[in-house]
Image 1 (cartoon, one colour):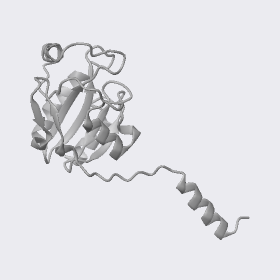
Image 2 (image 1 turned 90 degrees about the horizontal axis):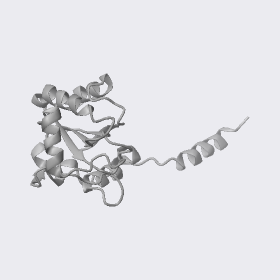
Image 3 (image 1 turned 135 degrees about the vertical axis):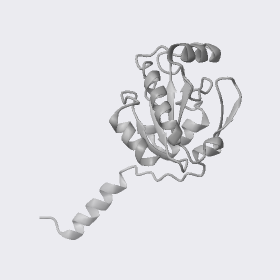
Length: 183
């Protein structure tokens, strides 16, 4: 049987190997700017005190049908303070090859998208938009998109609340419950 002193040392050593990151949040989400789909600067401070669902999107993906559900989510919860922000990216399988105008036309024509969209950006790697670099720094690898339609939920304080994989449907109970909890 281990004596209590050795057990304490073992536990301390075990925990020292975990990468327990504590977000410093030198900046919050609302401190950033990004270009919208029309190439105009979008100051994210205009969304202060709102809940943000940041989603990297693509037009030619198996998850593209999620645009409809994202729009539905936005229609239902926007009045309560939810903003869906779509960030087109061509980093996953070349599934967003079009120009910003082509992306905009596609989204409006096929899905009647009215939530804000940005211009096309990298969302992972060293050339990722600063929002995504910030997300990784403050929330770890779960904030780094693994594929299109990865979701980052940002609370009213401008900090990451939770992340959701591409497989999490926008109208899923899991996501809606979390949104309702923080709205």
